[in-house]
Length: 312
Image (cartoon, rainbow, N blue to C red; front, side, top):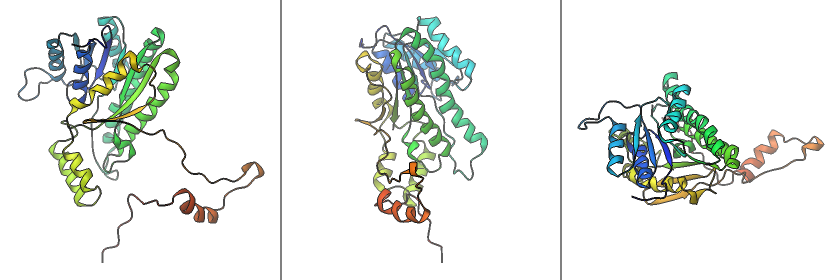
């Protein structure tokens, strides 16, 4: 067992299965004590223990310490209780990794309010709730690591308006938290993983990818990458690194993690601009914008979803 996180205490949400489970195991393998949070209380088929209890059992096999927790992070008060359980059990909270998530995929014209709310509540509100209750402790101890989980869906993903909005919100939340708490020795970063889990590569998801490819919405390369995506065990190294003292100066960064790839997303910046002196009352006319936007601001631009040709 490693020692890079020896003496550190962590909470990992959604740690019963998939990416969250692998992260919890990786942190424990480096010496951290872990609160394994997941609402799943029923054993999966073929398993004797409920998912969080199984993760705890496997952590103990590594020689580390862990407890299971079933609190619902979408509830402000129970999220606070989850943070308190770590402090009460281990003495303090050093690391928070927000992974818990669900999907309720639907085209936006068919999406129900309940489907929208469910996804936003788990992903965005759940992440806020956990960050909100963790940062007070971390500020007072002047140290802490928060890692949130985003998704490439924040760039736009057909049939996932709720999920895309939530993940975009988490990316922005991460950047804001980083700027608010960095002065106190607390960092907040975001990972954008791609890994095959029961959530991301079940038969329904595979059928969706195939349909998108057949309809020309994604390329063959993208289709093959998605149906052959690597497992969640490749994601934890970058998360573990961000939790160490060696990464104390890395704050507000969005990392891509899939298979053997670790990348960094570019900072959002304005890449082109046209200008008039508004202090003199100069304003753009629609005619001027009609001419200059395609020529100067959007040269080479291709509409990602052009209208279909009318059927004859």
